[in-house]
Image 1 (spheres, rainbow, N blue to C red):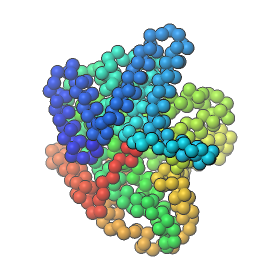
Image 2 (image 1 turned 120 degrees about the vertical axis):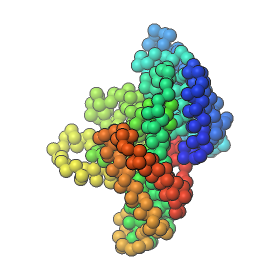
Image 3 (image 1 turned 60 degrees about the vertical axis):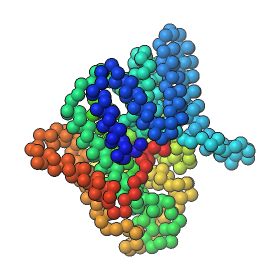
Image 4 (image 1 turned 180 degrees about the horizontal axis):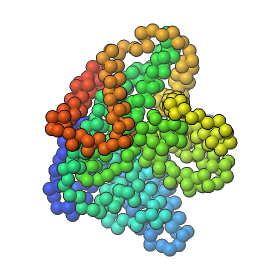
Amino acid sequence: MAFTSAKYLIFLVLVVVAYYLINPKFRKYLLLISSYYFYMCWNAKYALLMLFSTIITYISGILISKTDSRTKKKIYLILSFIINLGILILFKYYSFIVENLNEFFKMNIPETLNLLLPVGISFYTFQALSYSFDVYRKDIEPEKDFFKYALFVSFFPQLVAGPIEKSKDLVPQFKNEKKFEIDNIYKGSLLILIGFIYKLVISDRAAIYVNLVYNNVGAYQNVAGNAYIYAIATILFAIQIYFDFNAYSTIARGSAKILGYNLTINFKLPYLATSIKDFWRRWHISLSSWFKEYLYFPLGGSRVGIIKNLRNIMIVFLVSGLWHGAAWTFIIWGFLHGIYQVIETLLSKYSKIHINFKPLKILITFALVCFAWIFFRANNVGDAFLIIRGLFDNFHLNRGILLDISLIEYIILGVYLIVIGIFEILSTKVDLFEKIKKKNIIIRYTIYYILIFSSIIFGIYGPGFSMQEFIYFQF
């Protein structure tokens, strides 16, 4: 059930209406049933995996809280991690691991178990594990009500692609009775509309060019101006993935807001970052925070010597790359970001060279991020290196670099990028939702209709449009 489908909107309206009409004490059951139905629309039987993960982490939380023995607490925590990560490895990484064992050690292990990758497994697994860790650290009391805890793991707005919520932030919200507030409906609906613009008008339109190039890398090797073709495709992928993932997070926040719940803001203008460290404070914030709290800090963080600190950084980013997918392209992507951060750490500690011109720092950071995106998007490592080589190949400028895409598509994308860019920058300084709400009825509804019809006219029914699945569904 895609967020941008009519089916989801009908589902959401039905859930919201039922939620506010029924007795508050039954709402957790309604949301839990709705969340499992939402997940089962992809693959019903894999809902059992999510339920199993939920039971394991729920029991581990109870056991951890009931013993005073630090050793037993650690055992329960480790068992929770082993079982949950074991399931994740089996479904997501088995084929990759076996394929590489067979390749490097000439083994003959069967490379497939004919298992489909359960949608969103990395997200709900990490969310459930954060609960075990939070109970272990006494950051949160164990949830006695299994249904409320199960709702925390499966809450449908952020179930499939995040944001990854911490138990101490989301579980307490399920304990408070939510009253119907028109302000929540207003803000939530606007967030959903903005998410539709991000996805349908910008991300999916950028994907047209990106897919043409990245799915046919070899076809452009000897084309005049191929350096520009590869560069444009890579920059457009940076745009595509940002607006694709931000669209999901924004629609998730909007859906939850209508029901009275607040989810984590997952992006804060990441392409205006002035360093790679700054980029990761702005990009996929919920995942960055997860790795920081549950991997980087337990490893020692920056409280250890410089060598161990650099080691910790590399471990976090290699694991981050692997979390995104079972392929060497993702591992290299994570490795590059680790190297970037290692170099930044060393320069800040030992170098006296500092760039004070902010636009130059933003440009350098964006270029480094885009270079790493090549590996993230490439279908394989070979394609990635073909693109990198092509970037330094033929700089002959000609109209062919625009490929078979109409001028109107470039204009639509360009105009909306400018408008949305201004909107995002302004929204960090003022509450635009409140500003819009205070405008007179004509201005207010003009904005609403522009958002609605833009997603329809320039999105779904726009020239050359092809709806793309959310990129992070595969993770």
